[in-house]
Amino acid sequence: MVRVSIPNLALAGFAAFALTIPLLPGSAATAAVRRGAHASTSKTVRSQAASRPLVGKPRLASRSGRQGLRSRRSTPRRIRSIPWMKGNLPNVQAHGAYVLDLANGQELFTRRADEPRPIASISKLAAALTVVDRGLDLDATTTIIRADIDVARGGARSRLQEGMTLTNRDLLHAALLGSDNRAVPALGRAVGYDAAGLATAMTKKVGELGLKHTRFVEPTGLSPENVSTPRELIDLLRAVMDHPVLGEITKRLEYDVRPIGRAQLLRYSNTHRMASRPNTLVLGGKTGFNNAARYCLVLAARVGGRTIGMVFLGNEGELTRFGDVARVADWVQVHEGRAVPRETVIAAAPPSARTTVALPARPTPLTADRLMPTLPRLPETLPPSFDSPGATVPLAPPALVGEAIPVGTPPGGAPPD
Image 1 (cartoon, rainbow, N blue to C red):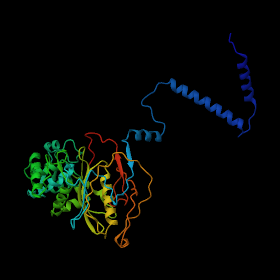
Image 2 (image 1 turned 180 degrees about the horizontal axis):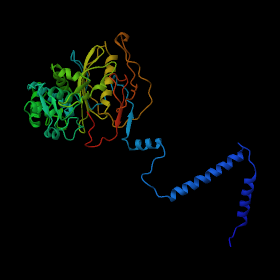
Image 3 (image 1 turned 60 degrees about the horizontal axis):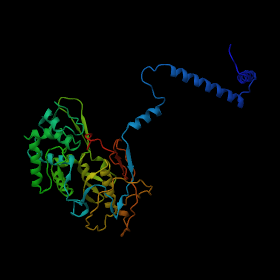
Image 4 (image 1 turned 90 degrees about the vertical axis):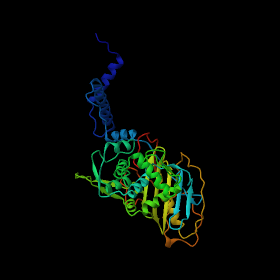
């Protein structure tokens, strides 16, 4: 015997009666019935799905879900907005900095200019100068061997594989444009140096240039004990740019390396190319990074009517060094035609955490023909825009530059210079 309660019978009878009533299309009652049927069907499907065993990997329901999963796995990045001036001076973010008019020797900005700091791959400027002055045969060939790979271990990924043979000219371009670590010990072997011998010769070479605080313990820049000062790095860059061979190499934005016996070319792009802007013509330079040095840059550029040398050491953001170039270039151009005081700036390191604020747009930088005879004190709250570090870099990036700062660079996971 099956017991059925009176309320249940009444409900069942009402449901049967309701289904016999014809419903008008589009009526509220029709919609209600359809919603109820859909809900019942959905519950049945979910119940059946729960009872079936899963076969293979579960799939995400939508493309947006897949993108969301990728975004959660990606490295978080913090964007900050930085005023381009502070105290009527360029708002440089580097721990150590030096800005010099290379034509007349006028110091435009200094911060800890004589404090030795790790310089990372800027060391390669000294390595190139040393091997070329030793009599490097540019047209001779050198093969990458296991010893070169061991010297470069721990650095950024190299495109030069063991057994690959290249001309020394190509190796110089790989070292200075692409900052390829394996190219440096190979060049040293081409002139009779092992890695330790090349580092010793580099220290001697810069000593001959009068650089008393610059020294090297290995040739690639991977060691934090390769150190120099912002002021001395300007002199090192001058020596490289004045060299008839190296000066032309540091100007290039791209170069195709052709390994001997292989059809495929290796294209190297200059690591300093993001410093190029509509008001900044880069004449030469070198970037650097390791965990101790952080992000570094030495650069010579034509800004307006002046040739400016810049050094930025110890930037925390990968793009901040290029933001410093932009802030200095805009400041120089706005002040062009006016006497700039020889002022030494003693500033504390920038705070590690900053709050993003909404600021008015920066005006278009003034050109020489638009400058007034006297300029008022300029506002300090003018923000940059932001560049995507993963995008293809144009030859003339936007005039406004900002920073995207990785949160927590993984130890040993060195990004490219």
